[in-house]
Length: 218
Image (cartoon, rainbow, N blue to C red; front, side):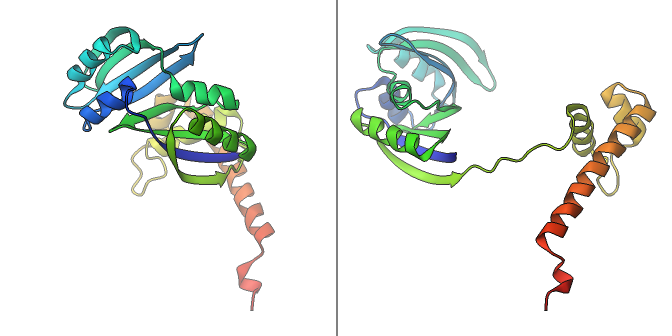
């Protein structure tokens, strides 16, 4: 499997391309999207100085057949819409690839991240060209799968310890603080954390052994 990031130039005449070029400092983030029968449904968050102008543009666009503002807040305006030109969705569907969300669109360009086989990535490129979409590949890299050696609860406790500063110097969180944060007894937090630490340390040492001891090299 490969991971790729593409920057896709959207063609003129499509509402999202036109409105994002008209308001280049305003970002449209696609949070959810689904292709239908000849249409596409989406949920976007619009953030920037011209977000209200972008909403009005959407309402007046011929290829946007429905547009509803769900929420206005400090982080942006949340809009649900339907369009007759879901070019990215159709390209992804025809190539058998699920485009990962969110997708950021600004100044006529969409940044998308994809995980798929190289064969399907090539197929996506063909579909994008078929829909008249120019694109630039920012990177393609092989996906490295890392198996989690810890049970879910141990991961939760270890991550909470890191996030709350238990391993900082000086320490920002005591074991009692951590237990309170997790809503468990101090002894439970201590034992769970000790087991997690033991597993992580043993795996780290095993990795060093497999790589060879650099002190033995000439």
